[in-house]
Length: 101
Image 1: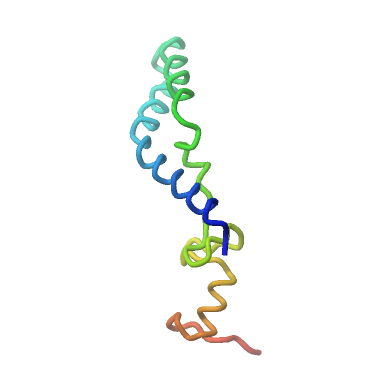
Image 2: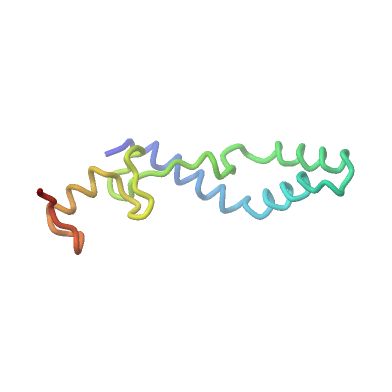
């Protein structure tokens, strides 16, 4: 189980990403628009830099929904490999059986 503080920090980042997503997207569109002047684009970059760093989508870490483990994460299942293995051995994941050959 991961530290509660790490999980909560990541959840806070997720909330900030949702809060600032529209503003960040509009500023990025202005900054990347080649038809605007360089001054306007630069002002958009400065406003973008004023936003909280944790509001950037890249700073959110994928964590296991069961244990909070940050590594060995399967996106499709929202779970780490270890939690997936434990739950499959218990028979809690339908259709998953132990492999042998």
